[in-house]
Amino acid sequence: MTTTQERETVAPAVSPEEIAARRLQADPADRVIFRVAGLYGVSTHSAPFPISKTESIDSGVVSITLDPESGASGNVGIMDFEKRYLRVRYNVHAVFPALHELVMSGKHDLSLLGPVRATATDECAVTEDYSGWRALGCMDFLPGSIWAGASGG
Image (cartoon, rainbow, N blue to C red):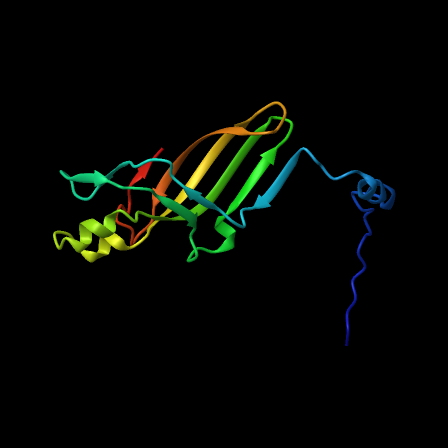
């Protein structure tokens, strides 16, 4: 034997007309989320490169690319056009070619030749004409890098 129970029907909280009106509204265009698909940079000068607590050398020219071992989900940004504000997070691979000479001297470990991996987060003030920005950011160095666990900005 099957028992049925009658229930009181309640009108939906949103009417079909309200749903149709929402569909006609324009999508917000003041903010855009984007993916960083490529990045390549070369420094214009050398920088001090710490190789121990007490020693540092000049790095030579530094080259940076997106980290090929990171997933695309880590390389994203958001642009707020109304506030002229840009925030971007991306994973980088930094190579210090001048370290080759140091390692080949036999005084230091070959692991210094491995790339430095880091996550960069930049917060940027965009110019009024949207032609450029001033970035302030920080780097978090990833495990396996020479500076693993370090942070800086």
